[in-house]
Image 1 (tube, rainbow, N blue to C red):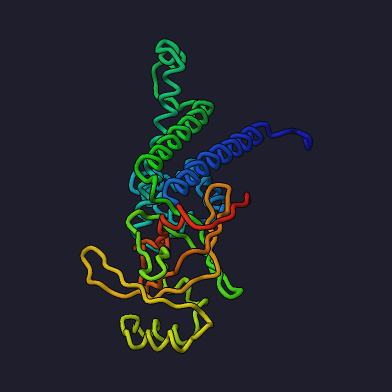
Image 2 (cartoon, rainbow, N blue to C red):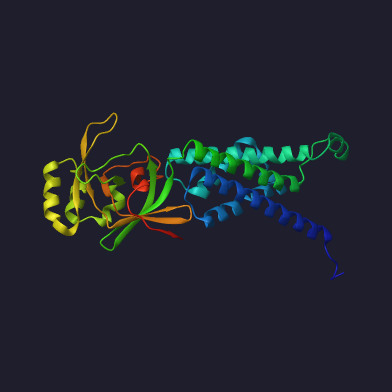
Length: 318
């Protein structure tokens, strides 16, 4: 009697393990796809942990007292929490974008699973095999649907990127100056064609908070006190820093805004990572912008396409 095997317990354990693994894989695929579509930067470990937690949700079915968690409104609340855990976005607009993408991708995967199932089975098989009653779709069709849905999403995403946003993409960028560097994300933008009138160098507009660590104290005091439009203060800073950093005054004008002056400096060089290559550029100026360029913090610089299209550069594969 002591060696008797509880086959019912083993069967339940196997079912639970299978249920957990399949839900983890599906949740991970949805969250990873959402990350790619929304261009969200988050650690893989965060998505892994969130997928693990969300894979426990189906187990509420084993506890009648928790059945209220399966109603429509609780599912909405749980999905909201899942998206927050996975990406922890500080911006409401970016969070809503992530949540919308999460729902769309979930529906695409679900639709592809159902479509795969019904297209690969005859009506007679479905009707007589399951006696015409409600039944769950076999897991192999769900996985096939996730794969098919992933291929569809990838195709649509690449089409959109190439046709609609071909000249607007986010790139990892690093600025080097006096043995220091700062790394951030920049947006390539055809609307940014700003050049410095004397040297004709293209201008890379970057948020002050990103490059603050590269600047002399005299310049930091000007921007920290919001005196960047004080021409006298800027002129004094140019004279004060001397050869420590090469500064230039850059006139600009923008649609719907008054004309103004940007203070710019010449870096040693910058690197831009694109696909599998790191490209190096040195014929440019960095324009200091004392405000946010992106309301959802997806990028901190506007990369003049003239920089990418010209100048001396060396290319090395990462």
